[in-house]
Amino acid sequence: MERLDKVLANSGYGSRKDVKKLVKAGFVEIDGEKIKSSDIQVDIQKNKIIIKGEALVYKKYVYYIMNKPVDVVSATFDNYDKTVIDLLKPVDASFNPFPVGRLDKDTVGLLMLTNDGEMNHRLISPKWHVDKVYYAEIDKAVDEEDIKAFKEGITLDDGYVCMPAVLNIINSDATGSKVKVTVQEGKFHQVKRMFIARGKEVVYLRRIKFGPICLDENLNEGEYRELTEDEISILNQPRHLK
Image (cartoon, rainbow, N blue to C red; front, top):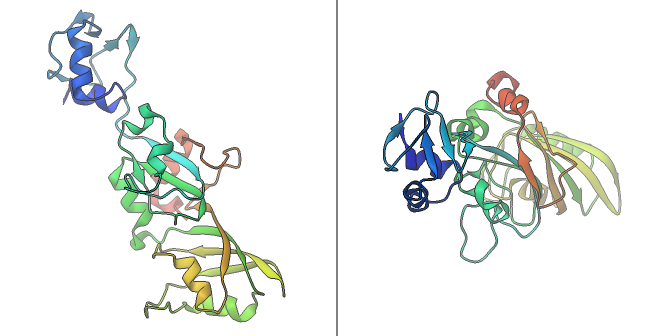
């Protein structure tokens, strides 16, 4: 059982104050009867809730995949910069989702958002060893020695030794390189710092895969969609996270 105002607020009908106004105006019915109080307890599995003539389809958790653009921060609030939450429609933001992990301000690509704390923990906890794959463009040639160093574990500027990572060279010459990097951590500016440790600089970085979820190429930067039921099901099965 949950309070009606909480259920409706979580379903995108505004704040609890807004829900109270809906109820007072006679727009809410439960099992065929108009109700007068927004703080009553309801069973979303049993009670039929109608708002302005439409049946409530209640979602406790939401799961979004976004193609994050540059100059947007992976946070729920920021005093100076636009956040990924600012890119959501008000009804989607009303579920109070938060970014799963983070992407740097100047990094683009796949970012998931959810209000499911348990799933968030599974995806970002080092315990689960979830792969995160990035496409990167580097200012110098990348070679077999770099591949070996990534595999052994790069030591960052603060002395932290990264977990072994996979570096795949797409192409490389004296003018620069295109590579894929697979890591299982999410340290601050990690991929960029790993290349800095090798005397090279990342000039472009895009996350293309997080666990089993790939970046949806149909999404332009700044666009997002809900995860499909199949995608959510896969994320809920730890053996499929890689």
